Amino acid sequence: MTRHLFHRTILGLVVLTTTTTVGCSTRWIDVTPSPANREHPATQSILNDERVPLVMDGFRMTQNGAPQNPSTEVEHRILNTMQETRLFSTLIPLGGNVASLGDKVVTARISFDETIDSHSGKTAWKGFVIGASMFLLSPVIDLDYDYAAEANLELGRWDGQIKRYTARSAGTVHYTVFAATPTMVGELKGRVTEACLTDLMDQLIRDTNFYTASSAPLPDSPIVSVAVKARKPLLSPTSPASAVPVSTTPTP
Amino acid sequence: MPFLARILTTLALMLLMTTTALHAAEISPKITVGTQEVGLSVGYMLPHRLTEDHTTKQQGPAFMPYWMMTLTDPIGNSWYRGQISLGAEMVYIQFQEPILTHGVGFAPKIKYTFVALDRIRSYAEFAGGPFWTDLAGKIPEESSEFNFVLMAGFGASYFLTDQVALNVGYRFQHVSNAGTSYPNIGLNASLPYGGFSFYF
Image (cartoon, rainbow over all chains, first blue to last red; front, side, top):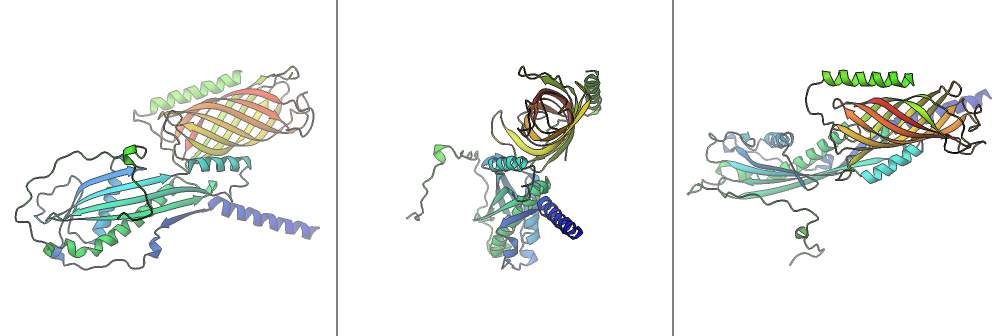
């Protein structure tokens, strides 16, 4: 009898421990492309004198296709990432003083598009089921939150040549109800953004020679005018004008 | 009722003192996925005798500490834009009428909070779970001490800061034993309440 009680007590403790450790603290983040799978990080060398300044000329952000106020936090993060490559001598943020930079300057236009899917409908149903089960199912029902980032970088050299780079990364945080915290979404966004910018910088570094001071002479006729225009509004996904033919066969 | 009056007066004074102490900054709470809410609601139960078989005029104060977790970002793009949260609450009722008895329950709870207005946020909620009371057996409506409580209602939260809100609301409450013993006519009541929440 005592032995039977002992076995039940042990079993109960195991179940309780498993439930609290697995059910209460399960949370993990998947990011694609995974930074761990980055096989060949780009590496180049550049003479110090060959480095030129980079000036931010434009920065746009969208969230689920809707334009947002540009986040200085994201802008600084992008600039910091570019600074860490040491490709450019100086980085001037949007609206910074460009008077003493010289003639050879690279201008940058960046757009940063975020896509968020919190799976609200599915989460609501799962929440209802978890509540109805008196939280007993909470360890086995995972909730998901998706975040994707796409960075487009357009760099213009002093002679008018332009190069474009695009990087995309996506991630999902999987969590149980008792493991959710307000910081987990921030952690997800941080990792996805990092993966996205790392990919972008890898592409940029491969073109190091394109941005050296000796890569191109100053134009004979310096650019004395710029085109002034309002930018095109972003088309709504539901707008008929935004429809484009989609085909699995390549366009001839 | 003097008890309820005292509670409501205390809540009103707390509101007055807190709001006068706050600076005039705009309050726009950012409730994100994973934000937790703990709080306490206090109300007074008033009976509803829905049929001729219902004779008991049960009433008394109710105390409901609770915990909630925000599960979704705001859903929708119109007046119904809101967030879903899941949680649980303890229910303690002191039945002062017809006999001084007690009831204790645990109820998982789901809440939909409308976020169209920044500082004032209305909500609808539903909760249900097991409920024990020693009032049963002493009244004709209920025979067993083990029962279930179901609650559905609505309310509004007024955010004093980004993290603290005062709540007022109304619930309809039903207590019965799901046919596990007879008689099982059930007890029905209105439960107006006030309280506060802390978000973190």
